[in-house]
Length: 598
Ligand SMILES: [Zn+2]
Image (cartoon, rainbow, N blue to C red):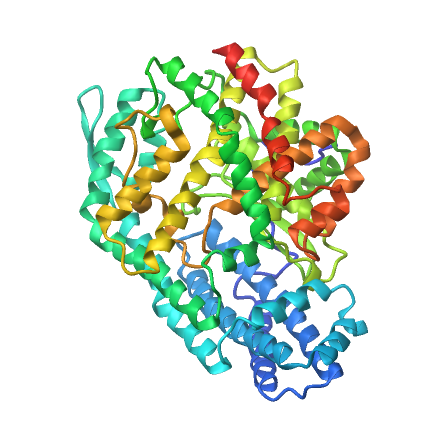
């Protein structure tokens, strides 16, 4: 049972990590990490190539990762909870340089692994100190086989800070200051920050959406030259580096990061293309509900069934509802969630100075998790809470595992969080206390999600593929970026979008294309969404007997590729389009419920 709930959303406690920011234990920890990292880096330059030495160096690197991760989690939590704190910001910047140094250590060790003769490498892998780390060490060697000399990699790491990532920072700065003048349907005119445009484009009033779209388009057009230079710069740098590292295709690196094969990605995307009619049915209904022959781009994120005018959820209510849904379907998850509340592991209080968004983080050193969000009392916030709790439960399942086997890719991370969301949503659907209006609203929200994962994000993938293909031949001009974006939208949306309803400037306004640290920030989300749909369908069919297999799945997410984990624990073949087709069909009941409502 929940023991300590308060009416105001929780503030988290980080006391078990450090006494406080700037406290002696924190200062000492920082100094020790910097000192030990420098020593390791120096040692790595002249590592003797015997199994014992290499295995010890790898273990030292693993332990160093835990300590840096502990610091990064602490500072990251403080920075998110108070974005105005300049001292914390300074430590954040210091940490970025520390991480770059650790990256150099990683590169040096990968270089060592590549240089080992195959038999000696196998001896290292089999070393007792590396028990359970086989997957990580093999991945290090694989990555190492596609890297430049240590000196060039070091230069690339430094240049990326001032080149590649500078484009990302420029994007943040430029768009953070953007605003536009908008005339509302009642005739009043307002200067609106760009950050509000998305909320305005989700307004139930179509006239508000249209006005926000048209007026909000102007700054993107005005800055198109700068933004196109940024996009070309980011992709161009990556392509140069891939070329120098002997990586033949621009998808190779994102696939490696996602720990999936091209065959699985192709199978998933083929299944989506073949079943586009499923999410399109929801869009057709949305058009009918608003009385238009098809949708405009500015209609895509708008609810067609408004949230009922019920009073905002209290923090207590939200926690109790999540807790009840978890407990009914998956008691261990419910107990875990109650424990995180008791220990004050959730930061949810709305207050000025907090960064937007939600995340889950944790310390491998302390084997503890933390969740971050800002709770305003909406159903959406409650779903976010369940989402982050899913991430936290995933990390909890990996606590007994060594760190080398606990690092999972984004593809599998998003599977665990979506699974928890679905437990909550299924619980709400069954809840007799919930009003029919709220249930209708939830179905509409579910359709919005299906559209995002099955049409909108695949559309971004389609665009990026076309863009990278052309970028390899030279700079891609604005007019061509607009054409590629329009073509991708027409391909995925088909006739559910009005002929003049595309957004050619979406390549500029979607921040995800400008994330300089991760390439193809799109398909891992689709993967996580669909795999979790498939897992949840099995859970519903098999009941509690499925849960031990789910836990085995979570526990292995850091020690094998996605294909291997899925085959071993769930006996499914991710390279088979039929598997993905089945996952897609899992949305049919919700779709039918939506059709009945309409
Ligand atoms: Zn997530």
